[in-house]
Length: 485
Image 1 (cartoon, one colour):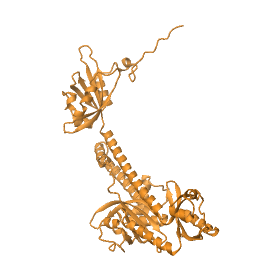
Image 2: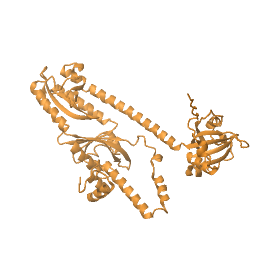
Image 3: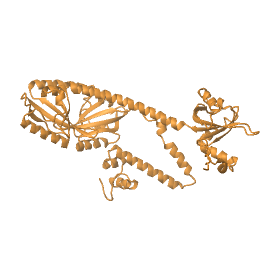
């Protein structure tokens, strides 16, 4: 049987037919390939002296020039990189390519982070041994890593704040004197019950949780509460009804509010005893809640449907730089709120349509010129007569700001535009830039107004017809021919 010749082995990553494919490449072509492969390539002799340099990045070439040629490589790096340079110039294992983070000093001062790998070319005849060091600019990578660390720290701070807020609300839920049940809106099963509800229903919490609500009431009251829950599912809120507990024959008032949590819907059901003693207790609880609202770290303000201030807590008064609540009563909230004159109108419009608004980003203007970036959540108070609007105002100016130096792309855009001079007519450059700015402004206006195009047109100073023309031109929104919203 004829024996087959074993295949020749080769080092991982090397060319298989280097002699045939690379033998006819001259020094100039090899130099061009080395420039293309990495940001900077250095040729180093066996004493560690830099003999020559080449750059694959024009900006890096202008920044560094030939300042390192003729110097020992170890003398051009910071002290913490000396050991890494020695390791890169040490005899490597066969076929080894090791990358090290090197902080190179630059002529203007400071350091430049570069990732280097080295490769030794042994002596051939009269030609001495040489080293090739291949470097990659790590500034963009380090900037991204820094932003990742800052984002992680911001997430951790937000998580800690949310945990603290959850703990506070959990304590309020447990301490409230009013019976409160959290009910699944789809299955009507009780998910949570506070101690006051357990006492009122006369059922241990482990038996109460999981039961279908309404329960523990007379048949007539059960029908009334069932209708109440159905109305709350449809509209989000419903007028309270009077009911009677089956065991104690106590009269209670039942109210329900629809809550949204992720993709699920919950009903917050409250049961209040209808008697004088409970009225006194409820008055004490209301006083406690009022005191809590006055000392809340977020601004709280109540207005009528026209946006006229009815009440405000201490934090909101301080944000508006006012002396007291009396000076604010009867004044329009628009005096302090909004980047433009339409922000309050957008909020009120959304409240009338949806009943609640969350995390509306805008600006609060103080009486003495201070501008504060805020987030507003608002809700309609339907149980009052007349109806009122409640706003919570949170100062978000102290949150972690993104790295503005990394986020600003305008200088880079300007450089790109100037590079077009001589190749593209200036009229075309200006037209393209104008279109880009118009598109960005329209997108920002739609985001501020929650896609309310009438308000967006008012912010931009355009007629609605002009706005729809531009929306179609830039492919924004979901407008068909002749369709307006």
